[in-house]
Length: 257
Image 1 (cartoon, one colour):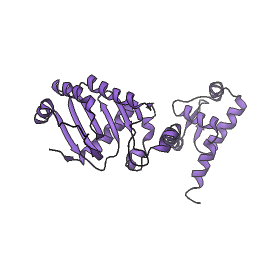
Image 2 (spheres, helix red, strand yellow):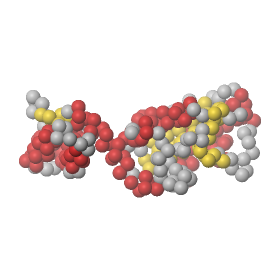
Image 3 (spheres, one colour):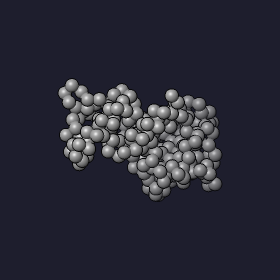
Image 4 (cartoon, helix red, strand yellow):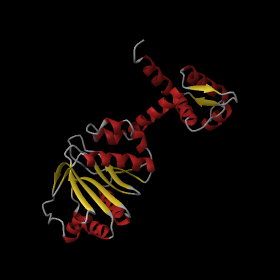
């Protein structure tokens, strides 16, 4: 037997939309065949055929109460396939934006980003960034290849009310031509430990978040520049993924004086 034998079998079984939807239903709770047929708007005979195929593939089994549940193998498969679902659902975005420099530990958990909104209007992106800075109560974290001059007043207000601000300069970071340097307020915030700046040339993600919301998570274009279009969310799994990404790059970053 080749390592890919079962791999191809699974793709064949789940290439049918009804079988995939049954797998998804069973990942949430147990159902009998009648309930599944009603939910999918198909006949009980057709439902039984799909269930038999999932059982024969080792993905599901019939319980003593007559309901169907996923096997441990089926649960893992369903969880893994959801990773692909996020990618294929956002095909147009990932056809132009690259994740080739994103560590494997995060690529394998893209399903955690599924509850999000895609933002393709750059004006909305930067308005969102200003808003989450204004609304922040605990912290604001940024991964950025540029400083946004428009958000400086809100950043100063945030640090004055004690909001922690961590700024991580990423790959190909450049100061804007008219950058005046940090003002008195941000200088004082750095001295007080409220505002910290680090640099990590290995980071190639654009991120702005506070403790409650990710204003934008964006990946570079194929030519390694940013158009600042990406995803936003208040979902806890999405926030957790972004928190770990930020911490991953922050821990290996160098201090900026």
